[in-house]
Amino acid sequence: QVQLVESGGGVVQPGQSLRLSCAASGFTFSDFPIHWVRQAPGKGLEWVAVISHDGSNKYYADSVKGRFTISRDNSKNTLHLQMNSLTDEDTAMYYCANAVGWGQGTLVTFSS
Amino acid sequence: SYELTQPPSVSVSPGQTASITCSGDKLGSKYASWYQQKPGQSPVLVIYQDDRRPSGIPERFSGSKSANTATLTISGTQAMDEADYYCQAWDSRIWVFGGGTKLTVL
Picture 1 (cartoon, helix red, strand yellow):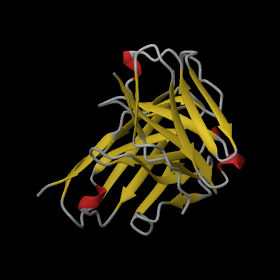
Picture 2 (picture 1 turned 135 degrees about the vertical axis):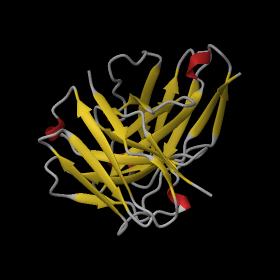
Picture 3 (picture 1 turned 60 degrees about the vertical axis):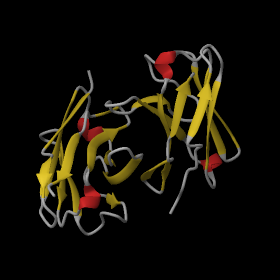
Picture 4 (picture 1 turned 30 degrees about the horizontal axis):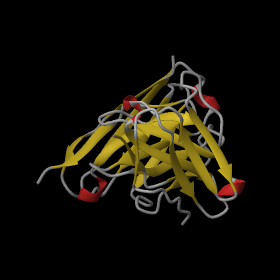
């Protein structure tokens, strides 16, 4: 069955970087564009970024443009999100998602 | 930037019909999807391409669209349907979500 499994979340301090990963299985990964979506605690869903099926096109929300980079490795069925210059406004559960399913999410939080 | 507008909350009695709307400029020319999210869980797709239901989603969930407003209808609402519901549309290759509607089954 379709599985999307995120990893890489954790506790960070302002200005630090983090790299999230999403491992896909159960479908032909290279056939689909795939997104990162985040959800701050108690808030709604916010689209973050998308990458085309072959990695040639990438689009970002204004809130992360210039700080986040989405990438994929179709040979390994893996999606990544490199997050730089993090701020406490980036605190959220981060999901990878596409037309066939969503992952369970990985949590990014800030230490006070 | 493109926006989708949903009511923050909707209440329904068990067994009755719940309707959640989603409006947006030129939504009539885009496909709308609906997601259900229960506390502590990932969103689950319940309607795609305006009115299509994924396998495994109960028949009581249906979708429709008229002009620039999409509607999610839950017939014979059950207590298990209490959740947050989000509409979503594509806009120039990106996903846009509505603000979400909390459905309370009283």
